[in-house]
Amino acid sequence: MITTITLNVSVDKAYHINETVESGKVIRVATCNMTAGGKGLNVSRVIKMCGEDVLATGFVGGHTGALVEDLLQKDEIKSKFVHTKGETRNCINILDQDNVSTEFLEPGAPVSEEEKNLFIKEFNEILDKTNVVTISGSSPQGLDKDIYRVLIDMVKKKGKKVILDTSGELLKEGIKACPTMIKPNSEEMESLLGVGINNREEIINSAIKLHKSGIEIVVVSLGGEGALLVSEDGIYQGKPPKIEAVNTVGCGDSMVAAFAVGFERGYSPVESLKYAVSVSAANALTSSTGSFIKEDAHKIFEDIKIIKI
Image 1 (cartoon, rainbow, N blue to C red):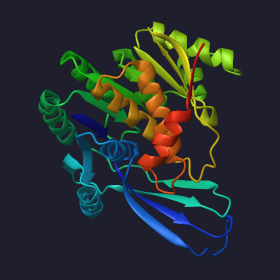
Image 2: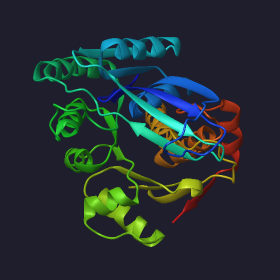
Image 3: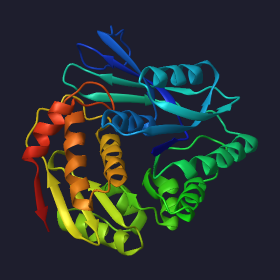
């Protein structure tokens, strides 16, 4: 089983409009899609669509939290959340006529010390039943910046694999525990290493440095050019065919999900890279966040080039 951690859960609303976003005017929404959100729940949906057993955990609260659990149940995703006194947040993504995305992200409600301790207790029990853990996104108020390091240490002590996909201080603290895999972008690597990254060679060298620091697999998204992977097996790029992207929101989460599936199935790093790039690219062909059509992924998979660097 794969377990996903989303400490800062949300209800995600995607508004599609037939114009551009401008301040100071009334904008009519053409369509609205609502999903259980937060990066980890995007990961959960994709894992489920890949055909693997997944359990979603984290914090939810109030009426919005109950809605999250209801939405996950409709997606047939099992969940085991700690319920908080604070209300779960909302996040809004506006897609305009040119498919340009504008996001509004509410902060999460504070989590108490009692709620945090209950989560750690329940997560420790969950670990006995899981093989792979993903930790994604931001954390709500009330939690220390080393929360992900604490959770990664717990996972590793039980001999399980863990993927960390976050940013800022949470990432800096989290990598001290050496997760199995991280997926930073160029800006995040600059912050971690204190260097400027301006070209492909510097991206590769930075990923190598992070790998040598004790992180088994470092994956860097290259946008339309796919992704770079650094592991003890070598350095590889997975390059997808050219596609007409509809919505790139959630592509990174889809990539994390597919790598988790690869770990669960025992794929090699390179096999996981090819699979993850195909799922991520297929996600870009749909308007929904954290969703893909299997037939699209299969077609893309056949045309992905794996380049040894």
